[in-house]
Image 1 (cartoon, rainbow, N blue to C red):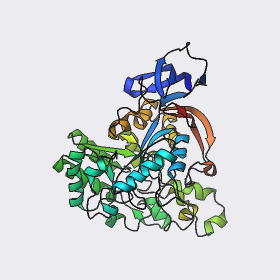
Image 2 (cartoon, rainbow, N blue to C red):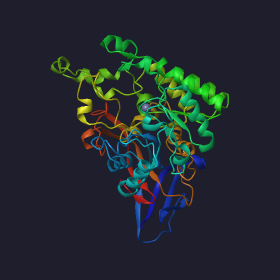
Image 3 (cartoon, rainbow, N blue to C red):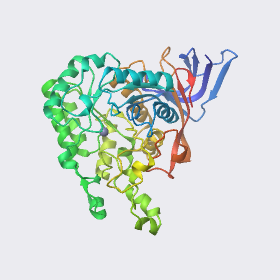
Image 4 (spheres, rainbow, N blue to C red):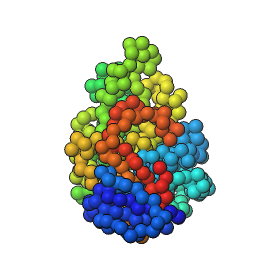
Length: 440
Ligand SMILES: [Zn+2]
């Protein structure tokens, strides 16, 4: 294995309270030296200059849709891990809404096997909470927890039955793994396609109220309190969710949550960005609005975005997770009502959240914490998300100031569905190193 020397990058590692210019030496896949200046190193060493760049532990994404098995037209484990590496991620967690569902031992073993043979980085599976994600019967959580899954979720859909959720949370006490819920009361969101508000009214599109998320978050927190179980709220999108989680945390409940780059940075008004650029003839066609902004939960209002930013700053939010949801062109090239939910996110996640750093809304160290040490803690992997000596050399080097124009045709992901296509963004991953090997 090659030796690598990373020189003079601004090195940030929240597990060591480190933020200074350092050299890092990597040998046999491990970090073996971390010093202000390393002058003694073997001849056969690859040198990477990280001057004016940031060197961070490899990013960890605890919420991704890899689509394999079953939907390999949308994405494969290979294409997802390549896309993740391009985005600076060295560990990604795979949601179970595959075909077959990741609700049993053999399917999870298949994903682990494929990740080992085809994957370029670490893939950790999330098992379904209920069989076929149908919400009627719990999966065999004890058996599945032994396979190395990091949690249980029916993501894509909520765990609708309060009793099923209560049982799942009770099991989390013995597996010590979180129940990750996609909080959405379907009776409230039913035919909605975007955030309920002024914009939906203006466009005549059916809205999804904040209460469809808030009311289930409130229910789940109550059940977490009753059971003492471990609850993780996926993709928080509302100011109400922020208030509820803050209360739960103040009470000392076992509740955590994540936010996506798009909910942190975009509002429902982004639907106009693309239609404003469109020609009149496009507007007159059947698809005037950019279906790439259609996502579940929907992009919300500025008030919600502001409270999410506050939540990240005051640690109400534990991690940034992408909810990478790749789709084929035909899944999105249709009417707004028919379009699939989701954004292909891995390759733009960093630049999205860095926009908040450039606006001086969030310090860079906070962003890195939420992408590295914090998710490592949440998935019970203290060996990850750190640059400590003798840990696996999972490292991301990025230029926070490099400007580039998003071109989804160049994505490694099969999913080209991003509302940021054609947008000028700032901040780019330069190198991703996984277990001491340069992947991108
Ligand atoms: Zn979801």
